[in-house]
Structure formats: C-alpha cells, structure tokens
Image (cartoon, rainbow, N blue to C red; front, side):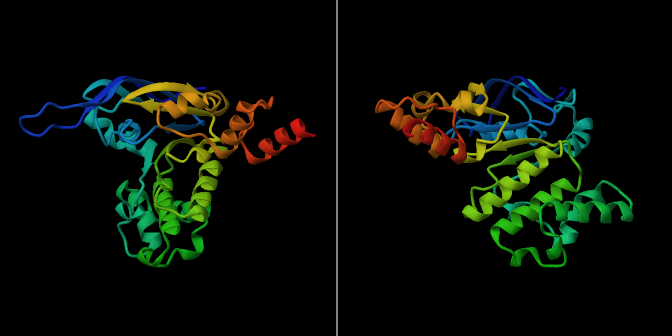
Length: 280
C-alpha cells in the first residue's frame, strides 16, 4: 500500500502578538496515511487536530519538520497547486466554500480555474453532484438549501477536482443527526471507491467505520490504531477528556459490574450480538 501523506516531526505555532511568545500547537507530529484508507483524527478542543488537517494540503505550512503529499514537500510553493489538486479539503462551515449563486456553477468553479475543457467540466460536475445525491438541485441557489445540502455541495466542489485524498475538518459539526448521517454515508462511499479519506471529528460514533484512528492531545499523537484497539482503552480516552461510542460505553459499564463482555463490539449490531451472547 503506497503512502499519500506523510508528516515528519511536524511542529507549528501561530504567530504571536507583539511582546508575547508563540505557543506551539503541533509538537513533533509523525503521521503516515496510506492510499485508499479511512483515517479518523480525534481529540478534545485545542488538541491540534484541525491545525494538523490544514497542513495536509498546504493551507498552513510547518514551523518545523515537513509534510509530504505523494513525495512533494508542501513548503515548495511551486508544488502547492498540484498538492491541492491531489488533496482536497472540506471545512466545518459550507458557506465558507460556496462561491456561486447556482449549484452547478459552484461545483464547476475549481475545474474551470484548473483550465479543463467545457465537456470535461460538465462531466465532472454531473458526476460529483450524483455522487453526493444533489444532481436534481444543480440549478438551485445554494443559499436556499439546508445546512446538510450545502455541505454536500461543498463536498461536490472538492470531488470535481478528482483528488486522491479528501480531508474533512469536522464536516458534521453544524448539522442535525440526519445531515450527519448523510455526510458519513458519502465518506463511506468515497472510501469504497478508493479515495483516501481523513476525517477530523469530535463525534466518536462517526469513527467506528474507520480503518484507523489517530488520537491527539497537546499537539502530539498519543494513540494510533484500529477503532477496536483505541476504543478498548476507555479509561485512557476519558482521561484525555474524550468519550467513546455509545455501544462501547454500555459494554464498558456492564463489564465494570462483572459481565464478561467483549469491548471490541463497536457497531450497534455487534453490541446487540454481544449482549445476546452473554445474557442468553
């Protein structure tokens, strides 16, 4: 499996106000993301997860260390356009990404700026809108859509560039449960089609289907493993100010009361099966 993104000793500090010292937000982060995988990055507010996300396609540049996308150093300004073609970014607030008054024009914005011919732009726009389930809204005004629909349009705008990796920085934070479910379904569809997905989130239930979870605290990676490996350490996560998926919380509390239950049952279906196995 080939590497899409690699960080080496990544450090970063936002510019300090005059007379004050810059405080590092990232402190020597080493992360490797393999092609076609779904990696979730979690951590409490201020842990550095969103700052890390903005380094993955060169929105922010390292104070120290380096970030490589397909071997290209993000610090090389001449490579930034190509890096951002390969790694797309979806933000928390879709209004920050929507630039046009008609849905299909908004999705076409990036391919047009990359200089693709009209026929290719049309093909990419239609393909992206169908993938996110918004093709029937292609002539609508984005500002009249719901928050979840706007987020799907923002995702389509990124997908129209056909990136090999998409970084989602808390894309469901402003959505209701239905909207969250729709976005996670799109992430899963992208993963099935071979797109590398990086999800920054504080909703633990959204990470259950990931191949890998990276846990951040104080600007460092403190855990890195499969969902079953990471969420099995319930006490460790709670000590970091984080919770676990509801299913894991139920099994953990029952286990504390003497029930011999497997903490690796993460999905609702697996949880039900494990409870049935034990109590039957």
